[in-house]
Structures are given as C-alpha cells and as structure tokens.
Image (cartoon, rainbow over all chains, first blue to last red; front, side, top):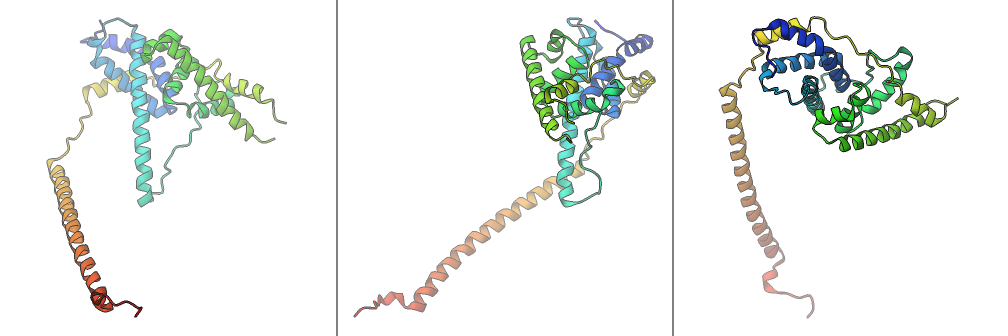
Length: 184
Length: 100
C-alpha cells in the first residue's frame, strides 16, 4: 500500500522518480507542453489523494501511467468539445481568435536531424483513432512492452498487438497521402 | 527529385528512434504541494441562475403552445371561409353545367 501521509519528503522523492515518465507520456498524448505540465500536476495530486487505493497489484509506474492516460484523454476530449463550441459561437460572433491550433508539435527530445520528419509523423498520429494513438505512442515513445500497455489500458495483449498493427498500417496510408503532395 | 515512397515512409516512421525524455518542471513538487494546500474550489451555480433558466424555458414553452393553438385555429377558419367564398363566387350550389 502507498502512503504519503505526514511524509512530504517521501512524496517529493516519489515525484522526482516518476515525473519524467508522467510528463513525457502526457506530452506525447497532448502534444502541448503547457497542457502536459498541468496534467502532470493533476496526476500527482490524484496520486496523493488516492494513494490509499493503490493495493500493489500492479507496479506503481503502471498505476501512474493509467492515471496519466485517463487524464490526458479527458483533457483532449474537453478541448475538442470547447473547440466545437467555439466553432458554433464563431458562426454568430467572430472574436477574431483562431478556432483551431495548428498541429505542428515535435517532441523536444527528438534528434535534431529528424525533427522535420517527426513533425510529419506526429501530424499523422494525430489523425489516428484514440485507442490506436495511445497504444502507438506508449509503444514507440514510451518504449513500453505489449504487456505493460495492456495493463495500462485494460485491454488484452492480443488486442494491443492488433491495435499496433492497425496503427502502423493506417500511419503508412496517411504518410503515402502526404508523399503524393510533396514537391517534385 | 522525390525519394522512393516506401523508403520515405520508412524514414518518417523511424523518426522517433532515439527520442530522449523531455525535461519537466524542476519546481513540480512545490507546485503540487501548493495546489494540495489551496485546492481550487469550483464556484457552485447560483440558485438565481437556475430559476432564471427555468422561468425562461417555461415562458418559451407556454408561448410555443399558445402560438401553435392560435395557428391551428386560424388555419381552420381560413380554410372554411375560403371554400365558402369560392362556392358563393362561382355559384356552385346550383349545379350548373356548361352543356345544355
């Protein structure tokens, strides 16, 4: 059982140990540094408040990944809802603000010579269905095994295999479309 | 000149190889502790706004029902008087025919 009560130092060590994993997962899913920072804080606040519910059946990191993925998904959905509402209100009142933020995110940890290519890949990843996107990012950027992803998402290992297969196939299809629009 | 499509796609797909973890906020612990000590409390919805919304909704509903009733009633009278006018105008009650 996890407990931080009356032990702030233990919680500080816990944050130091797990912050890179939580922040990078959120950053990859949300593709926005400010949102990732906010979600990272939310994850550790929930970890503090719900530490007593962690029974040690899974690893702490898996538990944290699960909270991070769930909070990130909620955040993405809420952002989409706001975007839709902004579109509707813009039909009646033009505030002059852009409705959508252009998706040109590149993870800061990407090797410099790959940045342009990675931007294109992130653009394609952004178009994948939610479950495929999560499985692909956890696997490719988080370096997690099928078993770990299955534990985090609550799906079976075979369905994760299938999701990743379809994600790669869809990405190749999307990239083939981008290729056709490349200048000669 | 454009590269071969498959080769280009492979390069893009492999662009995340060797990705390094990004640095998070070094003051995360302080921020989290501050938020734990001063939790953001959501403002409860004021009761007057609930009453106002319900009143407007009921008012609009009543207005719709009254409007609908009025329109169906006037439709009937118009259609009846319309037919009567035509009958009178053409004197159709006498059953005239154009042939002798």
